[in-house]
Image 1 (cartoon, helix red, strand yellow):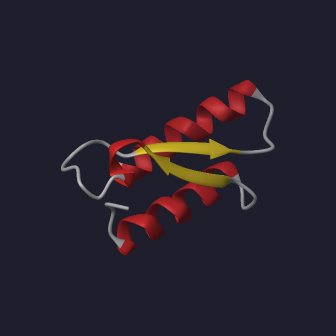
Image 2: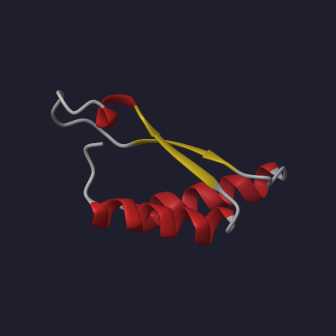
Length: 67
């Protein structure tokens, strides 16, 4: 995995705060391949939240927090 421990902790904390403590997070894409360089951070977030508006707000809040 090509993210630092600090980056991982920041991402996990931000996801849990915006999507809820039961949210599950997966890193995928080029960042899981140790032989590659660069690339964006691709995340899959699974949550029990079903309200589309709340999900949109959580996504925007997460993006703002991680930028």
